[in-house]
Length: 119
Image (tube, rainbow, N blue to C red; front, side, top):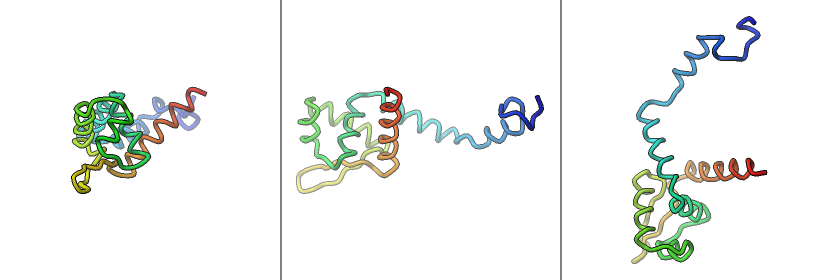
């Protein structure tokens, strides 16, 4: 089989080299690993999906998930450190929201992917 007729990267070292050059940097890979690690926690995922629907204070998240304020705060702290979630003050309340449209897209696409596989 000639290189021209092959769709396999292993048949064309130049193509493979090009793919390797387009890999994210080590720093980016490390940051992505931290995000995917954080998303292994069901509480954090549930919080993100709640926030995908709109901004919420800690008490509302606590009521929605039925878990302690301490557990919610710990999860929110982790999500904030990764810049997946941000917070703003409204009077005496801290209101949490998704950091940007990338997080919204990540959550929506992940859900769509999982639900598509189940069908």
